[in-house]
Structures are given as structure tokens and as C-alpha cells.
Image: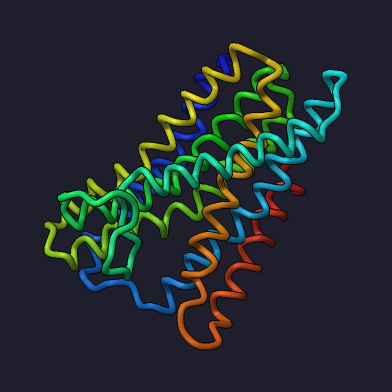
Length: 264
């Protein structure tokens, strides 16, 4: 399997399955997630995504641009800014509702509260899918060499680890909203399918024009860090003196850094 699209599908398929496994907890636990536990999950995800943005996306983007004979600064900075703008626009044009909030964001619509909750998590998963898909595509373009493939696997593993509690963080609140266990599981799982979709789509774009790869890598980094700064870190620190959110963020960063260095 040396096709970049197949590798991207395999990597994002794994992260999607981890989301589904997390969502399946709704069959075993009927209660909502404890606020402290939720802060830990969000903080850990923030740490993983921050580390992944640096080691798995921005640094490879610079190296890819330099290997092509250009400077790494322009695609790294330019793609990063475009990724931030993309998520900023998505925040404004897509109706969504964050967990624990009463008022939805984005344009007013008559969609159900449960639909808006799923869309909020779906927004998070777009840059994650792009990151994993591009990482595997880049490894395939390098002939599947061990270093590139190990780095892609480390990123997929890190994203998969943080997707497990994310799936539960969607399905359990939906159950509390009165949705059946099966429907809550399906909606929680489908919130992760966007990773597979965008992981493959972004490879189709970057694969057709090779010089776009550094731009797309940094684009995914900018989009992910937007999610981290805009939503995950603030939500991980809800409440007074949220040391649990701080420590879990640092732990997530450490785990992703270790995975990337050890496997990369």
C-alpha cells in the first residue's frame, strides 16, 4: 500500500475508530462526565494537539520546503495564518453549541440542540483529520521510509488517544439530553468521521500539487492551535484554580512529544 490516499485513509480511519470506541462508553455509563474529568480530557487533548502542531506539522513543513530548495518561513507562516482564518470563518458560518453552554454560536438556526453539540466537536476534528492524513501522505511520498512512517504513526496514535475520551464527551452528554444510547453512540461516532473525510480530501489537494504540502501541513497546524487556544484551554480551566486542567495539558504535550521523539 504505497498510495498516499490509502495511507491517509488508514491513519484517519484509526483515529475515527478510537472516537467510536470512546462513544461506545454510553452503553456502560449512563451518567454525564464529571466536570473535573472533563477538564482533564480537554486539557490532555489541548496538550496533544499543541505538541503535534509543532513536531508533526510545523517542523516537517519547514523541512519539506527547504528540501525543495525554498525557504521554510513563507509556507510555514503563510499556511499557519490561513489555517487560523479557516477555523475562524467556520466558527462564524457553522451553527454549533459547545458542551456546557446554553447559547449556540454561529448563525441562528432551528436545528436541535443535540445536532449543534455534535457540530461543535466536528469542527475540532477537521484539522485533526487533515494533520493525520497529510502526515501519512508525506510518508508515502517519501517512499514509506521508516522515519517518516514512524512519525505519522506517532501522530495517529496521539490523536487516537485523545479521540477516545472525546467520543465519550459527545455521546454521554447526548444521552443526558434524552437521546437513546444507540443514537448517542452513532452521533458520537459520526462526529469523528469528518477526520477520515478531510484527511483524504486534503491529500487529494496536496498530492496533485507537490509544492502545496508544506502549506497544507502548516495550515493544519494553524487550525489545530486555533481550536486549542479558542476552546480547549479555556474549557479545561473552567472553575477556580483548575490545576487539573493545567497538569493534564502539560501531560498531553509530554505524551505527544515522547511519542514523536521515540517513534520519529
